[in-house]
Image 1 (cartoon, rainbow, N blue to C red):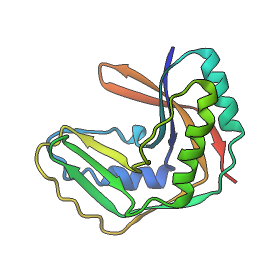
Image 2: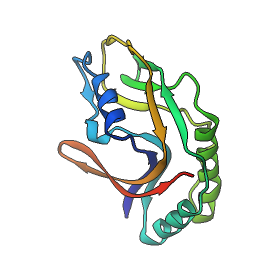
Image 3: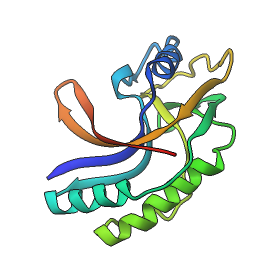
Image 4: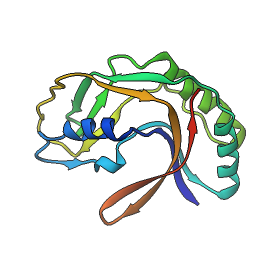
Length: 168
């Protein structure tokens, strides 16, 4: 069994900009820059047969390239999470998440019923409000989505892009 999810994986420029937002996080666990992503669908523990079905559905998915404009950095005190998010998720992003959830039902994946809350988690266990200023929006041209595996270890999670599918 593998622990998998579908995600948008930023390019190096977007990743660097996102990682720079954590400079004021003095207490808490900053997400390693190599792990920064936007989750589309959490799949959980997946066996080889279900993974093959998931990959088939993803390969058949058709969605346009779109721009994601990250404009806000937010902190939720109760959960201790700091994240970057768009003021409003683009329609193409929401449609991609809905279409993936619908298609994955044939693989036995229980679809998410809540609307997508597009965000990139930057830090966890943050107990004091960090400076939450974004000097300028981060422009992310999204041209693919990825199947990512999650590996838990002593240093925390490590994410590996297993496959990627181009948007058109």
